[in-house]
Image 1: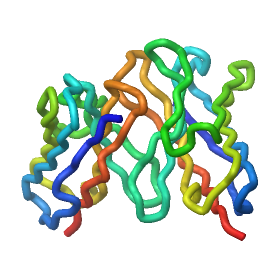
Image 2 (image 1 turned 120 degrees about the horizontal axis):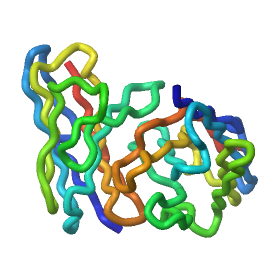
Image 3 (image 1 turned 90 degrees about the horizontal axis):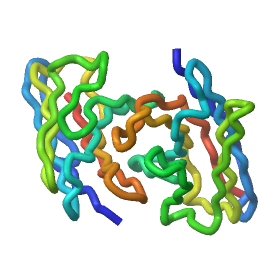
Length: 106
Length: 120
């Protein structure tokens, strides 16, 4: 199975900050990497697919980059509604796997 | 509007079985790959099982393999998950999730989830 290692596991930030979350795959996954935002009691929300493509309707302050084994999610100008847990997921091979998540808190 | 609505959760006994349903609307159900994803309390997301958009085959996650069956009835726009030999570690919110038409782009829509609690 492909393992995804996210870091940090949690971070504290303020409104207006720039936040970067990393995701490292245990083997090359090309750009088969997706990022989600998840808030308690809500359905996860797809933010970025194919490592760097912004999902329709997602604010442009979210961006993704990387290929192979190393990926990043960047949130520029952090907004109050961005405080949540973020997960990466690889779709290169089954079983599909997720990182353990990064909690972004005030 | 795309909607996915799960049902079938509740309090279940260890060793028992469950059958979850997910009804889809607002899209051509039969044309899309669908999966089940779960989140145990205080834990991250775990892919359980799904229909592949790439080849149409069924795949299962390691932690439930041998105990789980996924199926779909396109005439009823419904996805199912059957899980037997329930354990405490199966306690989780179970989500159904839809893939976009292009494979490998994650899950673009999710249901709100149904809570399964395994306890005596």
